[in-house]
Amino acid sequence: MKREEIFEKINEVFREEFDDESLVIKEETTAADVEGWDSLKHISLIEAIEDEFDIRFTMVEVNGMKNVEEMASIIAERIK
Image (cartoon, rainbow, N blue to C red; front, side, top):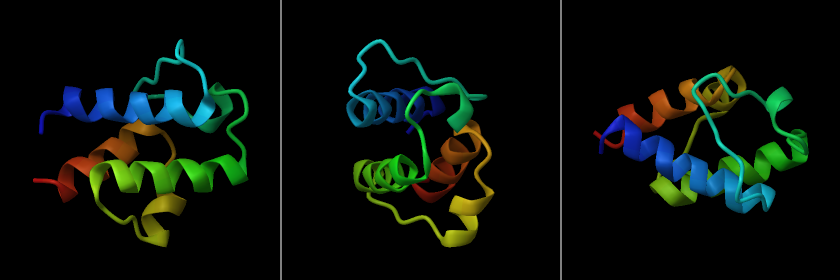
């Protein structure tokens, strides 16, 4: 799967999780950039991303994610 496709899927999940069809996620997007992205929403978001890509993140990976680009990199590595 190409990186652009990964970002498209991630963006779809974000739009669904935040109930905002206008939301556009970029590589540098962080929790501070998205209204309502708190710790509880983060858990829900991680679960939805895992389900979408049929993967499981480790706690170390989740704790280390500083932006969407890091999330996409982990996904890309897992679905090679």
